[in-house]
Amino acid sequence: MKYYSLNHQSPITNFKEATIRGQAPDKGLYFPDVIPQVDKELIENVEQYSNEEIAFRVIRPYVGEVIPDDELRRIVNETINFSIPLVKVTDNIYSLELFHGPTLAFKDVGARFMSRCLGYFVKDQQKKVIVLVATSGDTGGAVANGFYGVEGVEVVILYPSGKVSSVQEKQLTTLGKNIHALEVKGNFDDCQQMVKEAFADEALTNQLFLTSANSINVARWLPQQFYYFLAWKQWPFKNQPPVICVPSGNFGNICAGMLANQSGLPVKKFIAACNANDIIPNYLHSGELKLKPAVATISNAMDVANPSNFVRIMELFHQHLDETKAMLESCSIDDATTRKTIKTVYDKYHYLLDPHSAVAFKAMEDYQQQHPSQKGIIVSTAHPVKFPEVVEQEIGKTIEIPDSVKGIMNKQPVKTTIEVDYNSLKSFLHTI
Ligand SMILES: *Cc1c(COP(=O)(O)O)cnc(C)c1O
Image: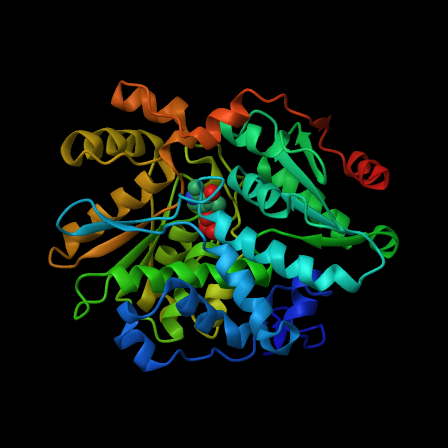
């Protein structure tokens, strides 16, 4: 498999180079030059295959010759070594629970896959690799956990001060070892901007071996297809492909689902459910891309102004807006409605949603109002316990904390606080 840059000014490359670089030299996102088709037989008899076998078959063509079969099987098996159940919430809405991994959010899948691939690739490398990542909440924890203790790799995580939940902050500041947390006195876009500046700084990148673990990295993006196939395996209505609604921020998750669909996975339509950061819903409705700054919401992992993976979705449809719109709808749900949804769904169906999954649930309900016979799947991206401040207030009781979270809540955080200032980041990188 070859990868090209969506800015079309960089040489074609392979999976290994694309993973190590993160971004193409022309700052474009890498994109596979063909979309492989999964066997029809696998789709038709999906229940007969193990999760590991399905995942291996999906990712095999994307990786190519740079990782041998036995090594790739090991990586895949370690990536999805937790349950990914499809749970019935109402007669028409099923929840794909992606929050049973170590950091209780879907980003575990991409982060675990990428960290293991990178670990394999740097084995023969002299220079230490620095993974530089900006997080709006969940990326940091998943990346920190995925890379923790991986030899030859240091991880630097930038997160916006006061804008991540207490559990999220603990997840990225309490590991130590090769994981470094930088608290930035700004918002997520500031963090992302500083990371971009570092990658664009040639003097720096000549000295240090920097790579990104944001959702633009192909090794994080592509394995997210796994759980769309695992949802299909558990889907009870094989003659009626589901509508899939994904709570979206940077649009990496939904883009992986749409890629899976183009590889042969049956899906009726995708809905990108956004919070008040509604640039893409507006774009799909009006055809005009009106940029504006990010606003803070209770679904903070989706507080992204300008979603970087959207260009990949457009590429799937040859940069044609009309073709894209035939497969993708998008809407914006405000915080008040999200809160009400958490409460109503809990009271009515005894199902507890986190704020991100609640955005998707409401978007799905709205869609089904227009299409009453259509059954669908919401992608539940985080465990409600990661957002106790919001969830407990809505349902009026405290929620049971899993043991994995109890452990870290008592640990002392280790972090360095910096201003929104690229030079502070640069100095810090030189100290590692
Ligand atoms: C990151 C995240 C999202 C947004 O996913 P994207 O791939 O950036 O669209 C949604 N929900 C949760 C809980 C997240 O952590």
